[in-house]
Image (tube, rainbow, N blue to C red):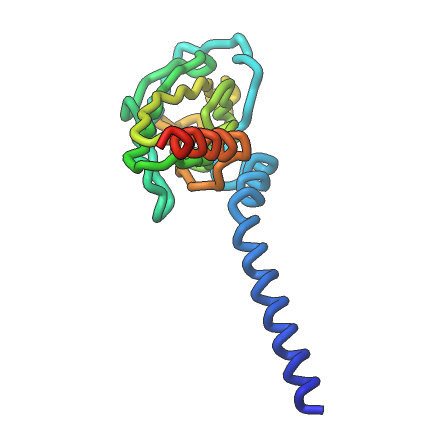
Length: 194
């Protein structure tokens, strides 16, 4: 009888550990989805193009870059800030470098501060929309095209703001299947030459 109870307890504990691991794995994508849908935490919007309305008022956009602990890339904004007119399309660049001797894949999450500005900050094109793979020693410039919606200027919560910070954090992810297959093909070719 005691053995049966011990078996159930072990099975329950294994189930809890598996559940917690799955929740930890899913937390970043779920949080990004939640923020994108609700605008919570300064998540930005996406757009096909600007609204066409450009105001005379300018806003300073600051750029920030981070990597999760253990992510081997070097990642930084190419410019620390820029001024754009509200409604005008801006173009900024971030730089990523893989100093390792192996391919590394990454996915960027993002937010805007102050968080009230997130629902007015729209990205037209961004490196964060897709996974990025850097080969050993590869350095790339990654663009982000954006605008601040003119309604930003009339919202009582944002109309006095003079600057916005766009921040990205890169997380290491598993190599996509096609990159892994290319890597294995390359290693097989090297082995056959030797």
